[in-house]
Image (cartoon, rainbow, N blue to C red):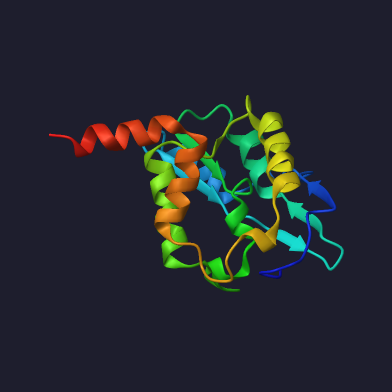
Length: 172
């Protein structure tokens, strides 16, 4: 992954085929505890090559969407549609994935029910990822980590109701 790859994305390949593993321990845990709400977060898995082609892996997301659709106690969040995840400076390292600031942003998204993926919206979500990537130009972003405030502002640009909600909370 490169933080500054010149030009726009040339192509995107989404791999979301999965093998059904019915002995998945997480699925068993979810089934055994219907009183607990499980928030499953799926971190972006990108590969951006020198030709600006993106390959992304949505296998885990698609597997869990398909296999938890009958569980009302599961909420799935996926962040492939946030362009800031392509920027290498937003990653902590290869083990910890995102920086603490980006993890704070993901908690903000859960609080506001953003980036939630369901069986009903999964196809539209994949299309949205493609739309985001088609308009993404890495050189438009600074060569530094994105701030929490910038990520919130990005979400507010997509969801104006967040800004109204924030303003109503701030006013006495």
